[in-house]
Image (tube, rainbow, N blue to C red; front, side, top):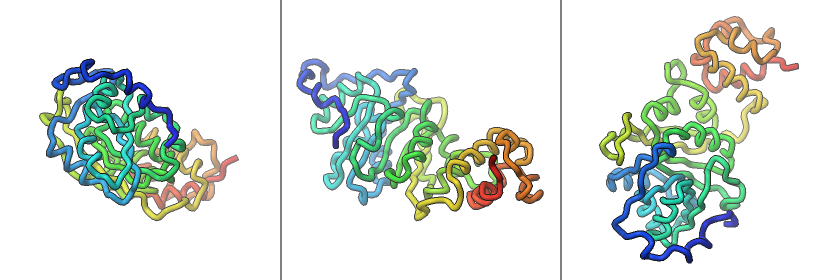
Length: 274
């Protein structure tokens, strides 16, 4: 593991700098809601398979998941945390943990383990969709994800075609991952309690290595279709300036939410881009 970390700062942290009873202050601008149920934390960690030797925890906060992850001695655990106060807390309470102080959305994932790794976390709700888009972009090195999301986001991610919650992430992620809604978590399990319920989902990489179409165009088509989801595909896809003459009227008269991943692949194949 050659990623830049804050390991070299550990010598500057002395046990007297932060009392063991101290808690990290939840910061609204970071979307922090600390899970305070050890039972739920154990259940989340148990949902992650032990097959992958490397695990990245995003936003560990005060280590409610971390304390269970590091007991899995067969797995190498690394954590990335953007909050410097949380980083100090983690160094003090989990001195053997490899902690990267930084932003997951900007982290060079190819330099992290130089091998596939699983992702786990109680993700900040204000960037949870961005985290999933990043996972999608790095799907070849992330075979599994177990994460806590706002319940509405979790339902959207695992939604099936025809559902009102079915959207861009539903299509893109289900093209390469098998997804499961695992369980719902009450607002009272957090400090401070969020205004919404939460949910834990699991994503495991399926056997699809590549789609049978131009994958960049596929992403463009999916996004264009859902960005104007109330319109038929004939109208929603006009922004792409593509020739739709090879696409059947039956498909063009539908809305994006009615198409499966396979349907979007076929649609991408038939659109003629200049």
